[in-house]
Length: 339
Image (cartoon, rainbow, N blue to C red; front, side, top):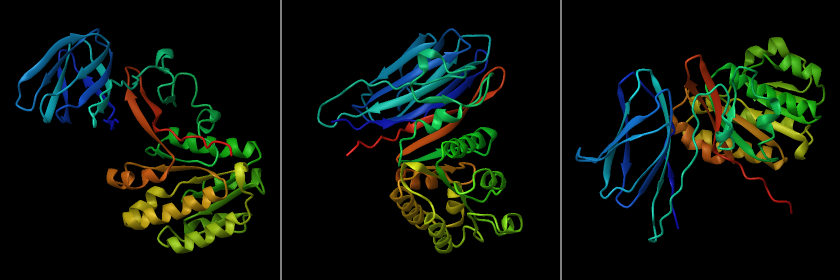
């Protein structure tokens, strides 16, 4: 019986001839496994110091390396990475700590990806979806096809063009297939276009009193004063949902989770989100929700992410030409078996 703990995925930059490091708390008997990929340098130095500052491993490794270490004592271990190149290098690590509970141990390595113009063939299938590149943004069906029907997925991403593309693709892909869409947001900018283009299929709840002047009289569009009144928001949402055909023919986008977490206490926000997700999934809807990590604390994100069936995060990785963003599955939703 194993209790794996996934560590953070990190992209580290090492200047010419420079050094960087990362720290990891390990318990005696754990197995610390980290897949390391290097771009720039042909090799790097890897050194591990134990909690007493004594070097327990020191070696030079190539561009692809799996560090596998079993600590003899509990404490903070420091891993130093040293560049052996005259150029700036980029190193990405993803770790897995495997803890034996009943004397059973196992070696498990998880995947990682670096900043390439496209996701390399050898690294595809490891949970990364390219959002930007030299050709075009993500195909609208790339993400939506990976979300099983009647599942709820959270995307943790900052405000950026790539996230807007994800939301727009999710909505328009469903509408083009004749599905009904329930859209909840403070952003009224895309509502006018969609409710006119897809009458009877696009339903929106805009949580901004100022939107009333622009959207007054719009079919299937309701205005809520703000996210401050969650009870009133629920009543308005129920009114709209009553007009939507449920089942696999409908999807929902909750674009107000960050605002709810910012405005309300975590217990109250969690209670509201639990009830809203139950209401949407009760109608058979597939749900996509976004959280902006620049708006709310990591504790707030962690406090609600378990309510979702799946969890994606957007990561930005620098290369020599430009910053590129990727969507990465932290936890994939499981398709429900047919009954």
